[in-house]
Image (cartoon, rainbow, N blue to C red; front, side, top):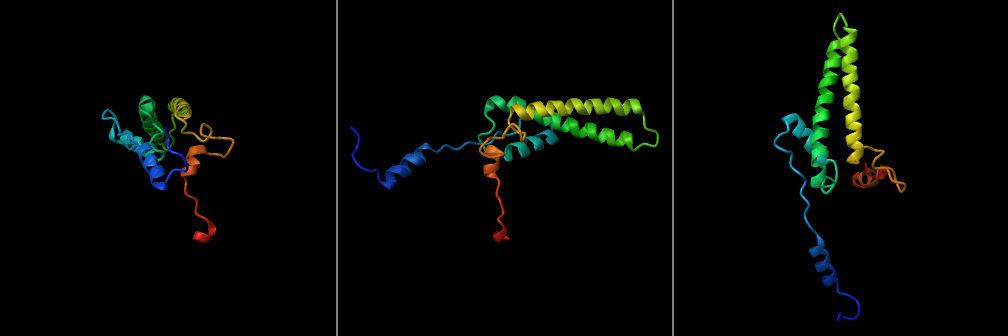
Length: 141
């Protein structure tokens, strides 16, 4: 049978500390390139520690790969467009590649709730991510 009356502050504190668990952010997999590993770390550190459970790691791995591929395609487009003689066929092919990478990134961002639309809630735009943001108030400058 339980104790009667209100619980003491120490009882409440003991219960709260017992319920706490440390959640580590996932380390970048070894099969990623250094650039892809940087994207992994940037993405993981931008969100709460428990945002990426183990079952989402393959999606996150692909997110990193597509992000770097999209950067490289963008560099190729810039190089092709800056030449004196622009090869229209080459630029069209690169733009098609860029569109495919963008579509892949969009799908991955939505499935991992990384995009603004995927994390929108009726109570406030941004949901969990907006609660983490620190707002500088005008009187704190």
